[in-house]
Length: 278
Image 1 (cartoon, rainbow, N blue to C red):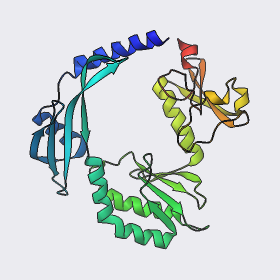
Image 2 (image 1 turned 120 degrees about the horizontal axis):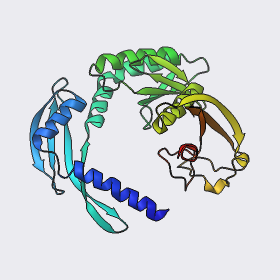
Image 3 (image 1 turned 60 degrees about the horizontal axis):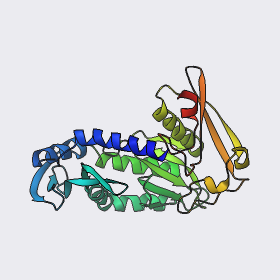
């Protein structure tokens, strides 16, 4: 299996090398910035140590500066070099978000006090974390108001797919509020949407059928086979797990809500898609 995976990796890398064999030029970087971040003008360009270029640009709407950098990086497998590939990096997201906070913080603070919520900027998954500070917190009113402020700021819709994570006083997640859609999704539907999206990644024709709760002892695996991260609790045989079932052309497959250490798939979560269709 290891040799097969290595061969597949090398084949994939060869395809990448054919499509990206040099760093972006200055004009390509400027075009990339305009296409991905909004209208901008070039301020300066410098060469980098890794055969690339770093361009400083100025956002035409708000006037703040950020960089976009294109460089080549070596591809190493088992100690051997298989050429190099291009990567593009930028601090636009950080600079844009910092501007949002500095521009709108006073309004956010007023909403937090009025609707009894706490607004923080932690986490990668959510743009902001909205935590209730009272039993009868008006979190729905708060997220609607905050969304209106961000929509007014974000006319280019850079945050078009972003959402707030909403939590109760005990830090239990209640759901998500999608900013530009102004749509509330409770935590149950949020989980369902996540696994439906994963199923579509395996097969775009996948249709959700049902979900079933089980105990981990029913999966046939040992708890130490589960991959956990950071503050995740350790699995035991009594840990509850959820299986999501989908169908494609009359065939049924599942995706489970846990990740195995030695399970290879197009998605992280344990599933039987390959066994059913390949």
